[in-house]
Image (cartoon, rainbow, N blue to C red):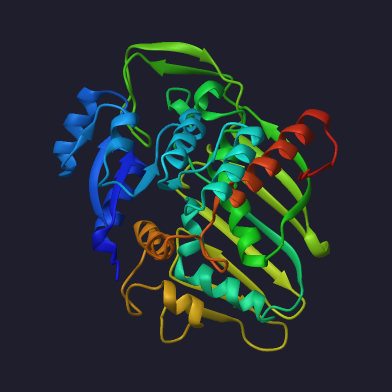
Length: 385
């Protein structure tokens, strides 16, 4: 029987997230056989630093390597569509970072190609795999909160607070038309649909760019870098720093979310509260080990992540006993464990907890509605074809 150690994976991109992918794959016993970088020279250097045996000079050479069964795409957003398309055409399974593509037309094409290929396809909405989020999803499904009525929250970061902060995501040509919403807001929106079992039906969105001119360094910049360049070029910015969105969910539930990359002191704070007819649940990614559960007629609860106290879904996602902290990197190992179970089976399963290309396309469609609503100042229905 095939084991995870029998599977070879290659990773495209070895920046912040690509490195997390490589480390998570090693943790679950998948062989990382090679990586592809933006240049052969960078690839050789990064492969040596990370202990990866092969640096491929091109995607064609990566896909020609029969040792590679799965490819992880962690390159800049503008490359996702073409790379995922080539990977599927080569008969490989693919795990792609979000957003799945630059446009919903591109993501729709990838959904169709993935379905026709029969290959396992995933979009790395890893926040689903905090154990307490798995617990909440099962709790809602089992009616533990009652009928969902209101979903609220935010996703705040501060890494683009200053006009000297720079990253390729700031420019439409490489990051896409939506920046804060596409980069971090998509995580919140996917997570809420996963937890509640309800898709977003319509949005009323306001997008704001508070820093219209930024100073791009002449040299390369790593994501979340705190270094300040002295040689810079002023660049006009037309992607959003902040978004506030009203939401209508399927089944009549209402919601609101604020998204910001300018919130000083918030390094990676995703919060939500789900209010049901019987109880409520609230969680914060900067305190991922605790879940607040609210009641009307009895004391509120604070559930600390503990496999012995969570439901089956939460316990299955936990990798440590209670009191041993699990964090961001652990969600990748849990997510990849679920994906590679299907890789071993050879085909996507009907019952899966991880996001696939259809889920990635869903967030592209919601993004289209957000852009249109911000442009028109009206409620916009999410169009699904």
